[in-house]
Length: 318
Image 1 (tube, helix red, strand yellow):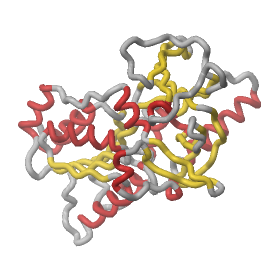
Image 2 (image 1 turned 180 degrees about the vertical axis):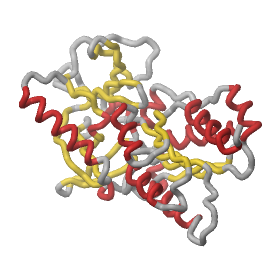
Image 3 (image 1 turned 90 degrees about the horizontal axis):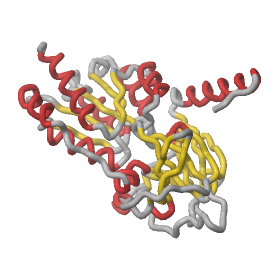
């Protein structure tokens, strides 16, 4: 962003501070937008780098997924452009006869352009106003949460699942790490991980299976916190060795979850790493302020496994 005056700079810094403070109060700001079905969708503004009108020049990418229109130039870098409507099985956006827009987003250290019909407005929500839909039907969809604004539903997409199916996720763990795990992992080690994204939980499960370590997965932080607190309710030692948590989640976000875990004397000593696609430095800094012991970008299984082995080495005194 280019700041051209002192007033603009002051306003920009106030805006950054306001949005940053939301992360400390279980709140978020989302951009709402429309796709070709004319329903309203939402995306956390922290994932959005910029919104721009879809450029005319798009470079075709041979053998790309059908939902990948091509690549566009963004600040001198080629960024893949994904038609969100097409990816969801809807009618593709007609770029030839109508103006469309691109959300330039960062997910797990990579940048993508998400083509939308048009942006709508920014809305401010508490995470406890964002709910995970009930029922097994939603387990097969791209919907991860839903909220309401002025009586209108706002659907929050599991963009990580969409990207995993379009771009693909490598969930394999390096052989040397698997071999190292054979000397460190024992039956008493138990990892707890919480993430509302089906794609992220699948990757974590695969990585931990390759490691041979016992693990329990939760799809929301409230349930994970309840399980943690119940495990030490009678004064017994917590059975979990390491905790991984997403940041963006319905009902309770990862920052609030971290703060609550670290505020409990019986849980505070457990190594807790935030594991997020919000992989910029500001979120890493906020994680530390909340008491997290580590921060790992999502969809990098070697980093997850490496963190676990490092903690087990420390615990064993090696």
